[in-house]
Length: 370
Image 1: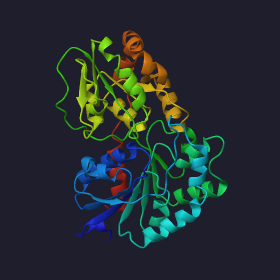
Image 2: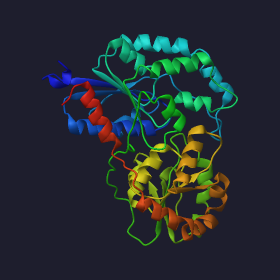
Image 3: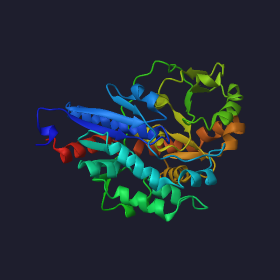
Image 4: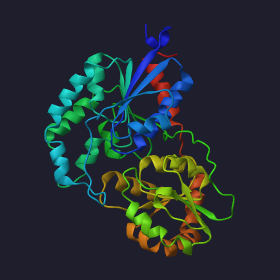
């Protein structure tokens, strides 16, 4: 009898890669949905870089602070550091095999969920339990988009062989077409995956145009945000919401505690200025808040996101240097012209965002919940 059809509790092990905050947020949304449908499951989430952030997002969860074997290196401007990435993956198959062996000796779970930690899938296969993957891009696609090449055929073949052992791979809208084609026999399209926003008490009731400026988790935009903020006093009709770590004191600036979840502010804003991270984009679309994406050095994921969203007319782009040096000139022109069309498209779109519920229901059906 399936654990979910018996009186005993079931357990789920979740693997989250250490690159980007978005995968952790998406997993939190899925966990929340699973809990609404079943109260018989205990969760353990394994990650390293964001382990301390897990309790802020997810209640009553065990956290395992372990590096999950997937990472890549960036230059100061965010561009991939090619030689460093090559070095990281030089012995990857050997490290991956050792990781699988180690996990198989310690994991006790009824099913596994992962953003796209490849090793999670053979671990599940060895243990005889189902594994489910959730991602809007895959690392095989990402690394194959870099030039010069950074991974060899052995690594690529390992990636593919691992992913083949997943039961289902869930992909939201705007996932690259090449990924959907390659994994067609495993893939299931789902709506956007977003969490329910928590209430905030820091939004000022005034008539100013409200703008949230978000940095990346690794602070890549920080030097450019500092430069942009030096001129916000020239924009008295705008109210800017920023991290208090930038120490900007101006009448039209509201500082946000760095420990808050900045995405909770998205539903209350007129505009979000951010990098082209998929989680932030998803939440802006779900809550119908227009966004302005900041261009950056070559990054396959960001480039794909920017192209797709510009094509869908749900957001626009601003060059990094224009944001840093000319925001006081650029922003009023943007709001008077292009913003109006984007706001209309955002209010009219039919992009669904109940992906977390659909994934949760499908997983529970597959592992035995009725």
